[in-house]
Image 1 (cartoon, rainbow over the protein chains, first blue to last red):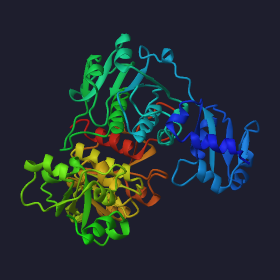
Image 2 (image 1 turned 60 degrees about the vertical axis):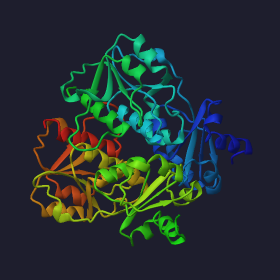
Image 3 (image 1 turned 90 degrees about the vertical axis):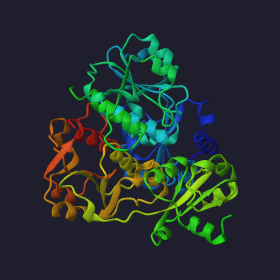
Image 4 (image 1 turned 90 degrees about the horizontal axis):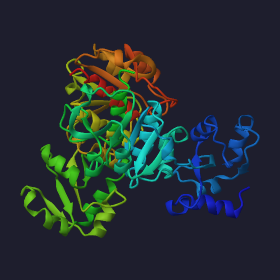
Length: 247
Length: 247
């Protein structure tokens, strides 16, 4: 059974202000729990309904601390409109900009991405394309927003995410940086090479002037219709596919 | 001022069951209103706050019927968590499968897409790539769901959407149909040509066996990491980009 203090902590973690003071966060549902375990991320605490625990009895490593909760308690601590029968507390990443090396591999940089679904989807897509580092401007949506976590589909356990001053960081690196804009060079004709920084801008106003100035290259996805822009996570995905086109 | 009957109708249109009995739907915010007018879609009624109407006095065509509503009324009829100062009632598309021609141009087919954001984003992306027809299986999310409309960013006024039995429709056409799956031919090596059907499957279980059987080709987006799948709207976007790669 959950203690009152545990319920209070789990409920608190739904709020950004509260989350920022703790080193753990909540993952919900079978998919994320499986991905955590596959990534050797051991939950500090796994909370599940008696039915879920019965059905998954043989599959959980014995050293995981488990608490039972009924459907009512799950609804209280869940961030989902349809609460999952299982959730877990896991440790946040330790952000370390020194471990991100655009000199030797591709890094995605996000300037002012505000939509949680977009950030999560971009991490999932980066993971698909074997890109394991994303650098976010400080005004991007918070990584541990439950909607971000949910839409990463587990990429949160494989892709490193660090928040920093993007323009300064890019400038400090002597690497090729490509800004995805609406009037740049057609990405179909760009030779990307094996490493560098790909910058994707905000949903509403693109890449900021300071960040754009830090990039040597401006690139664009060719359009054939009348739409005036693409969704940010879609644009990021097409650019990542193009990066790997000749891989 | 809005009448009580108008408020009731506008509130009703938030519900799928109610919407299905009417030929109009609601669009919210400046972006969608602008796109409607650009697409020669004349709102039956435009509803806005006095402040919005003052600010946009010169820009609205005179023949549009306008009603004022205060912020409280807007909140009642809005589907957004942050209500917009302007919304409008416009006519739905007239679905007509006879006007969709995969023999001469690319058509996107969606099998059981349930997430409103995904459907809207796929329409927006299709519009970007100059694809003006999307055929949905009958179990796809409803086109007039407010979240779908919002995420189309106006593509709803340019891309035709028809719901039908997908397997039967594909079989009835003698065209090349490509199913996006996880174990098909690498899309980088596929020569797509100028027309055909591209099928994208559901978020949770991909393309159904019947629809897959109706497709001659199975194609896949090459992955380079450990993610086991891509978001449906991301997969659709990468495939559409690839269709236009040599255009």
